[in-house]
Image (cartoon, rainbow, N blue to C red; front, side, top):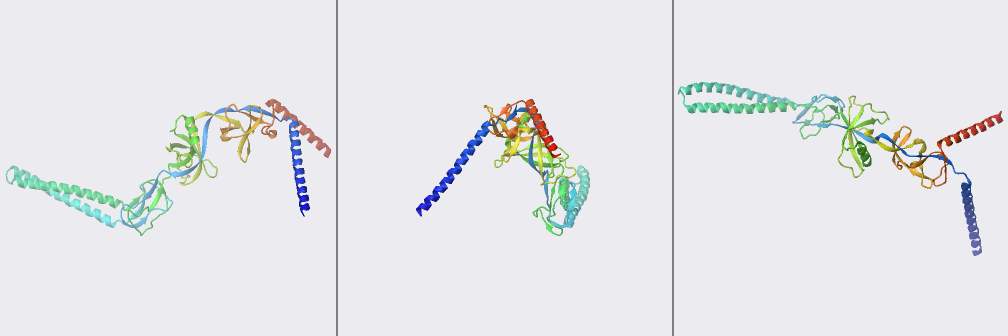
Length: 399
């Protein structure tokens, strides 16, 4: 039994050793082939800078400039509604009516009280005028005149109070017609007709203003620093473009006219806001869009030819040339395009050397042969000619 186990182990160890030796041999063979293989020919250029207007993209959300809850300012039964849910209404337009009879009667009583006091005051002033003549001729006592003067003044005070009460009664009566405080679009009616409402009932409905309208968006604090450095100031109005969820561009440009005074610690962003005209009510509060923010002044930024950039699952990368003239894989971050160039946000700086042509045969750390663009063009023409010649020969065989 033990002898069988020893034989099996020996066979397994032999198989492993054989496989390992085969792998080593293949590796040595591959390395030898790589060494004997001529170094790929490539062209190399230095990273340059372009003067461009920086742009920054961010997700944006449409927000009303005004969001107003329409409230009842008096108590009473809701008797009429003058709009449909979703209507656009104008400032001052009547939306609801609260049963007005009680308040109308109070206003009429206050008005009657004013009329009564006015009549009493007119009579008192006439009496006072007669008394003034009589007291001058000593036909009545001075004390009687003073009493009539006091009565006249008291009526004046009462009339002023009554007029104030009448004005207040008219004001309260006006509250029976609930009006829109702003231009905008009406939402859902929260309290239906027939209900008794009070100032504490809550919003009868809500109005969102639609023109002009705000779009808020977060900007990474590092991008904000770049933007501020480009413009030379932190507080500045900047051009903004909007792109709808479909990708279509909104036809009116906006102005970024506000930024928050702090960085959100949870996201590392600063809240920005732009204002847009919305005359056709295309932008709807709550909608999510893409915002493109433009710097006001140009700045010098590193750029890389798009043909020199490759991409894998980890992102965009180029082959940079180190001090030993060997290619090294370098990942980069881009921030938009400038013609046929990527604008480099991270990974490269002016003066860095990169492989711009012949990328297909380059491997990190392996030798390359650097040639000029003219030489590369000649090689490509020669390869095309050879390929065409081979194709012609193949076509001739088929005949």
